[in-house]
Length: 196
Image (cartoon, rainbow, N blue to C red; front, side):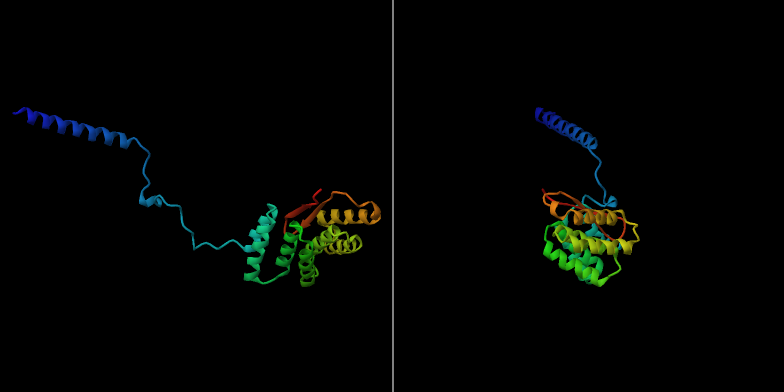
């Protein structure tokens, strides 16, 4: 055997040794994702499941005080369901949260006209009227909400108490920071705070 042949055998032995070391190191790494586990890509949309109701999404956004996003969600829900009293009330409440009092009043008045027996919509209209400084009308509207609700909702009762206190002290209402409680159909309350 020539020295060149020995060098070739040594080179191929070194190559085999290097391959063995690399494969041993590679087997120590993290487990790869197989195609049966869905592959390395995120899961797609499950079209067999029912979509979440747009009104419910909007109410969740209201609870998170994301009023602009909630308004968008109520608008999308209106395209699917029409301008129901619940959607009008939600849009008015979202506008109130954004400080758009004129738009809010128009929508809340339409909501109570659409469903005159809905205490929560009357409450939210009363809160808007207090925010606008129309205390006498707010008191009247909140009395109606309280009567429709049979005094069951604490938020409506608290808002009526606040309106009654404000109507007794009309001259001394400037500069007060009050927390108003807006409500929706169901169990959630929205809290609107006046900015200082």
